[in-house]
Length: 251
Image (tube, rainbow, N blue to C red; front, side, top):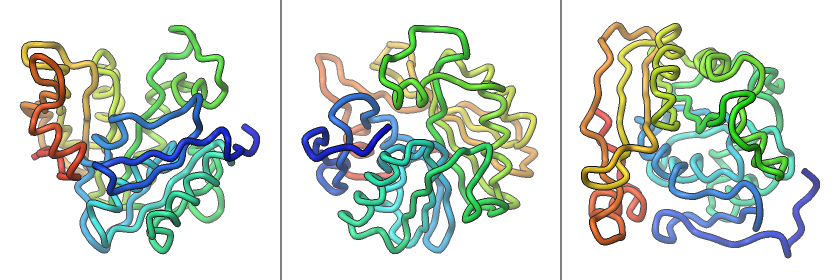
């Protein structure tokens, strides 16, 4: 992706206006997934967090807003999105503790190579290699389609960034749950499955799955979060997460 011009940018907000986000008008745009992902990361002030595939910084900035003392690093393949993410960090007054790097999760730049984090979080590509219809937009295609090694390689690379006892938090399609749990089980334990129900009595299209390095607890499924009310609009519980910046009740 080449540099993004001002005419190709929209100026949006997240968390009810608490976080400002400049992002491309077309292609890869933040919706509610990064907000929900950030709300599930159990970070505390003074800890270090790492986002794999940080885009324009939506999830990282939402996490940094909710936990003022946390420091967040993000890796993103597209240099133009990294520049936007850095601009977003400055616009939100967070550039002293939120930094983004251009590079590959599987070949980290020197600033990140070998570094371990208390928390790693990601919105991995949703489409299995060779399946589905790929977007004509290069940035969206990279963000949604798995590469070599698939989901298992992505999970392994994220787990490699965890400090002892660190947590990995992922948001993904609900129909990939089995593959996600299988991949996580190779590297971490204490897996928590948190469904994001589309509505009361409706199936979940998204799930959040978390695990902890070195944990031995069995896998558990939480009640999850109902996103939409009957008749439209978000539930009050979802509004508290999406508009007010509250944490998801993962435990």
